[in-house]
Length: 520
Image (tube, rainbow, N blue to C red; front, side, top):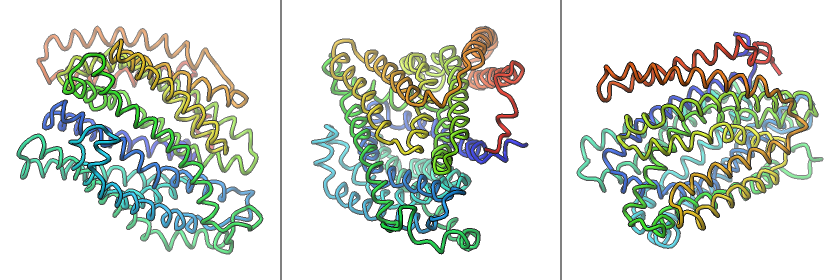
């Protein structure tokens, strides 16, 4: 099909498929973990991920984005004074590996202090110690993925994601079968699964890079290997340029990550102030973070994939001063984020309660899914907008807007949750996401050509009609189907809604083939 000639669309499709596969695997893995750990221990297990996120931000996230952005800029047709993408990759790997080893040593040697002083949960200490082992492997994978994103080749990162997820699940399942002896030992196995998955993903990425090294070198030798400086008058070597950009991106991401982590850590504490017991607060946190949020974030595989491919594309267009291409990309991103968002609002609002009950046997998870469904359009838009603004080189803007949205969430958490409970936190999540999307949209308003009829009114009217009819059909069908056999029926109904929605979008000209086939 012609739209596969568009690197942005092709890369997004590849990453989306990989993201959906890994999320499906991860979704059933979550159900498995909930069963072998219980909601309380699942909540404790989830508490190690804020530390994971902070460490990854330091050794991987900013460097990966910097590699992708620099390679996107240097591959611009109008950038004749550029350096080798492989040299950018090598510089990034040296920096990331050094930082990851330093952080691994710190977390491995101080797990009790981190658990007691930062996470506020002493029982997390052994999990933190194990988790630190994955840092060096994760850092190498992140750099290699950043390289492939920069050259707009998504196949290797996509395959690495799938291998990492499959390896993790297979390791945990086999260890549970042969060595599982109780909830606590199962939690230890689950953390070792994280390490096993990262090691397998890293090995694949490194092998794939070496296999294609000769081909890559021959393709870019004529253009890149003769240059040793980036386009800055030759004053700074590649490593220093990468260090400067990654430091700025890492600082931004790190502050945001700290706020995210503080938010996650204080949820159980705020719920205890509301009047819940420590076990009750951890149970609610486990339901929210381990059951409801994975469901709601499942479709974000699409928006995340699109955002990853957008950044180097926008950076390249910015270097070429191709503002027409930027305008088309921003308009395209806004439109398809909204169209995707409305679909999943419909599905989660109508079937959210059933999803919580069928998959987790937990009515609370279902109610959270329904409430959080309204995150979808604003989450998808802000994900794309953040990538676009970063690609244009305005990382300070995304930092300010993201911090503002997180401050709103933390205000709801610290001030309102102790009075009104978890629903106040859910309301804060919705409000902060709306504000973030609106502010970023305002920053990009000159690049957006809006069409409320085809972006909002027609899709929403169709989904209201299709959603109400599909729910009636589902209710009739499930009257004849018992228990877990209702899951295939739910999946079939949701798939039918998706198929009808896509056909409607084409028939009503909300989507047209021309924009999908556009090579630019």
